[in-house]
Length: 528
Image 1: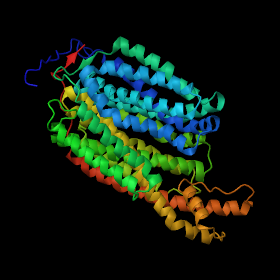
Image 2 (image 1 turned 90 degrees about the vertical axis):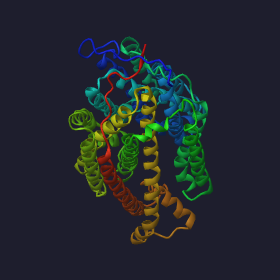
Image 3 (image 1 turned 135 degrees about the vertical axis):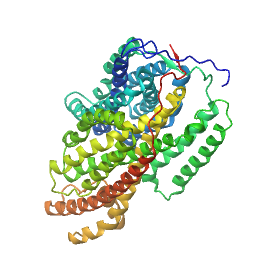
Image 4 (image 1 turned 90 degrees about the horizontal axis):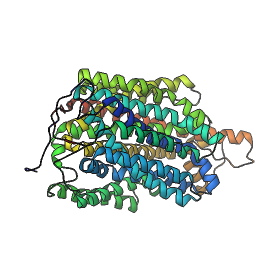
């Protein structure tokens, strides 16, 4: 707005600390604790699901909604949450997010029915959405431009550490305490994060914004809901089903209405001028492609370890440690490299390394041991880290500082959409390949032909490397079924990783057009 009041940030009064910035490194600690809480929750829930299902008598669909309900709420609300931070203060929204996430975690652990648990998981997703964009905006406000990439790198290392610890912590808690403890653990982490945040984080918000674009909120939320719902339900409905097509069409129509309204609104939720910056647009697409590759890969590798290799969830988590642990080292190094060379070359090289890792994963077999998966996992850590750090810096760093919350919400939304797309699209690739090759493997194993409805059940299990042999089946037949199912699943997984290899190469080419984020010193911003 032309008459909006702005406050220009003064220069730092001492190294590492200023009246505008607060203390950068303690701010990083506070936001990292908040992100750690969210990431731990995301990885431990998968470990707890089987026990939750048994104790609360939940169906498979119920357990899917324990995860999907959370992800849906998170994805739908992220950009709106970022805007609320820009308007009312990123620290305030961050603190509300932490408090709400911890309290809903407590409520989930106290739930005595699956319906109550799912409802609180949805509410937890809304609070998680408040927390994440605010964290990125606080980092941008706290750090000078030349140190922002390093801060984002350490933030990424926290994500890696939390992801690595999640399956192990979750497995130990479920095995030795109970499933409720995997949610209760968020309460002390949240309390520490709130204390640190209250003491060291300085408030920041845009002075030139004055109201919420509520029609924009409704339209964007509707479009995101239709898109994410379609992606989540497509494996169940089928991609060609009328319901899937209807939700995808709804996403397009409501999304088009949102874009039209953003061009008319006085203070739009997502100003279209953001996307006039090619780096912001490409950075958002890069985040989608990175998440597509990463989450799609992790989804099928869990079935590979637990189905083909018959590992426990805890052992499967340990097998995946090289990637998560590698990110602890790779993310800060990626931040340093991007600070020195700019984002273009590190991101492009990172996606080429990712493509190499995906190709190696497409060669995994039934008999391969720890090293065969550990090497591509380490490559993935060093390939994905510069993309995660660089794309985040490109999106948040190139956006006007008064829209840093919205930019953070865009970055997180891109990750959610990319991850959901990766799981759904690669799931369809695997299912199609399994359907094509399973009959041949079945016949080659000299197994008896089954009625179509029973064969369909075997095929459905093969999509997840589950043989599903009935109790009492003779051991030679069990082994023959497992061999046919595992071979079919591996063919599907290999094709999915080959697809991901192509996606990574495409992302490497896109990276060549991006530019570093703008400097933040002197940007109009109001500090509390």
